[in-house]
Length: 90
Image (cartoon, rainbow, N blue to C red; front, side, top):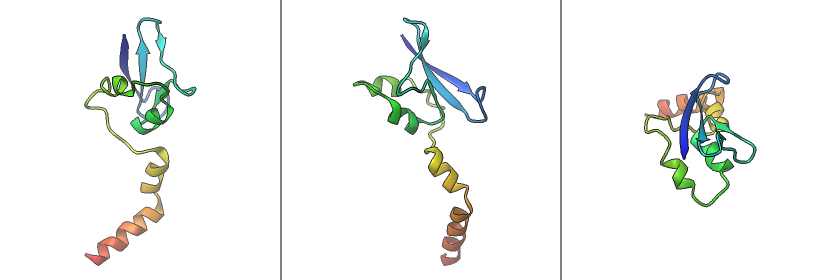
């Protein structure tokens, strides 16, 4: 049986999740990764035919976040300048 595991920020400062296979008693690994900090990265790493099986296991309270690149852009000066510009047009 596959279980969704909310690792939290135990590994680093990022909130992470993983999947644990109780039959073989180890964490699932896809494309060399065993944990992810967002669903998008998990979907990129997933290898197999039944990704919906894993999607259904993700807890409804798990935050849906964008990739690290998009996250960094959102916090960048360029993004803040863009938002400021858009606000002046209102």
